Amino acid sequence: MQQAREWIKNASKIAVLTGAGISAESGVPTFRGDQGLWKQYKPEELATPEAFLRDPRLVWEWYDWRRHSIAKALPNPGHKALVELECQKRYFTLITQNVDGLHDRAGSGRILKLHGDIWRLRCLDCRADWPDRRVPLPKLPPHCRCGGMARPGVVWFGEPLPDGMWMEAEHAAAAAEVLLVIGTSAVVYPAASLVTLARAAKARIIEINIEETPISGEVDCSLRGPSGEILPKLVA
Image (cartoon, rainbow, N blue to C red; front, side):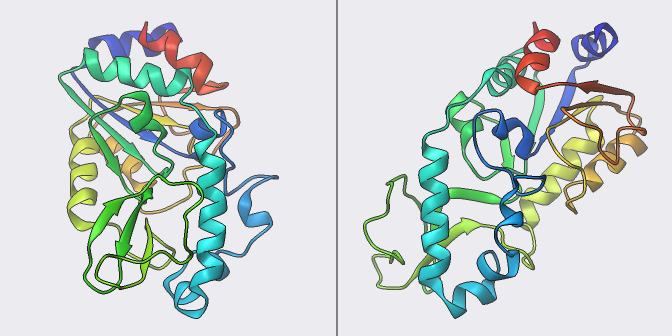
């Protein structure tokens, strides 16, 4: 812990990669693990473009339920510690795989949302993109002002990540002196490749997770425990 604190204190450029684990501490269901959402649902039935075209109402009913579940969650001390770290560092980038918006609500400003935002909607016809935090949504599926059907503003299985955002994430990982990997299983690509990129650039890699992951043996420091307990101690 002390060594990790020193690395963070002395670094001027820090990148952070967060996954579902940090949000799970706020009560947001994860996708993997014993109680993960994919134990109950098949991704191809609810989180693909094909599924949406096949039955948009079913997909939206699931996402409306998820939005309702996420709306009850609050940012935890781990989210807030990352806001404090951002305030301390001139060069800081938060890269998240989460779509729940908890980093925004905590106050983070420099965020790259690799997998989109569940609180945004996107029109299939005119491509308009807008925020909508209503829970529940009054009509399923929701529609745009132009009359076109709207979809959730998230990246589904089989879809590419936004090009510009991914390039920014790669740049941040390659330039970082320290990369914090928090609450992610490190098995979802291409996000997991940021760890390899940072390592190749000689960054110190600090993992924070409640359990061992595929990258635990390859990082410079692996800290076991909830990020809500560990991060405030690292940042203080």
